[in-house]
Image (cartoon, rainbow over all chains, first blue to last red; front, side, top):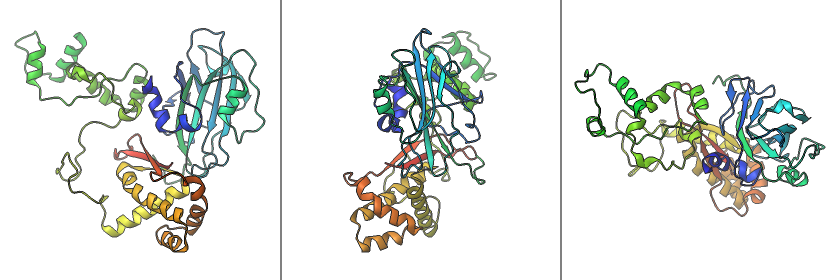
Length: 173
Length: 216
């Protein structure tokens, strides 16, 4: 299991966003039906404009999951005073389905990395019951640890992150 | 075993039309040059990603799996997502003079004359201090670390002389003033090691190994 955790630890997702956990569920995040998100890879801003398809594993459809997408490097990685910025939250996702079956409490906001290279983290939490998760008031100054404590979510069951930076004219890739 | 032998057969098509139709492990191992212990094939979780990025090397890996030494099963420490794209083979780019050791090499030359090298390192540290995280080649990232740490140490001292020394190295004065203002809070307790390097996928144009370098 530490094979899945190594890139999360090296990329400091585990240190800054959540605490160390054991991933117990499969989660695939796919943009535009072609680009799968893998830990530490870089995606262009043109790819991540619209919301991705998030497929989750699990055994039955009775357990509900919460998906959170945050940016821990807001507004800039050298000075992240707005840490973290919440981009997307979907609650009450039934197991073995994908995120479109859940309730989108915070709508998907297109990431706009202005300064530096930002990490965008997808976290999946297991809910204790249905409709137990409260919507946060603002997108900025979001704290994932505090949010999961307040709503009884505990440690995440799956996580993945990718990098993105502003697309300038010179960056042809 | 069946898939191994079929893969191996297609690797040496036409070389010898098999006087012996039966292959034995000992004869195959002795026939081949000592193989580099290649990384074990990725698990079923990763082939989708690997196929999306590099279909060809995956086929080459498949045909050699039977010959990899069996004791390489404990997976290497580096995660497959990063090490699947940094190959184990030596990259020969200095005219064929490649050594396995670093004896006596003190300064990374970065393929540039000294004045350009200094300018490159100055601009890279300026950009890193401005943006917090940049993506560059691995050689440049590991050469930069010394200068970034030097700048942060100057800022930790904080006196006027050190500030003027920093102004002489970093290209933009806003960054120097911002650095001197925030370093005591941010790196007050940390002794050294103010950067982190994360290796990543090679660049598409020239397959240069890339890395993210970020301020801790």
